[in-house]
Length: 94
Image 1 (cartoon, rainbow, N blue to C red):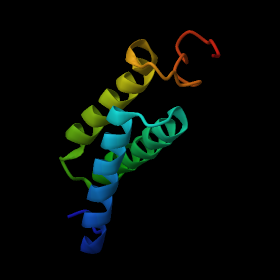
Image 2 (image 1 turned 180 degrees about the horizontal axis):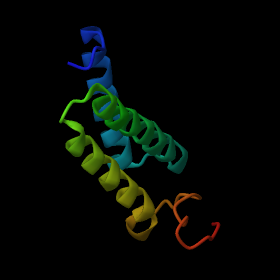
Image 3 (image 1 turned 30 degrees about the vertical axis):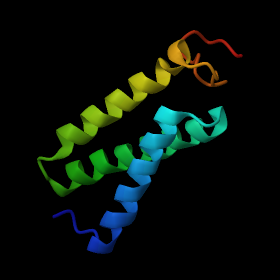
């Protein structure tokens, strides 16, 4: 147990589902970038909470964080609506 109240489970689960839908559906580049940012901070804080509590459950959160970063860096290769922040690796702006 990480010490967080149990009433946070359902709102965080709903936010994760909505963020995943927004990232996959991509209604707008702004909303998708916002969902990426929200998930990034959520997963970063999840890894931090597991590590600081001494809980051995941090590897799945770290793996999800790495997958999210890879997804963000490769998003403009497959999307019709390009993100202005998607070309971070090349140092380009759209």
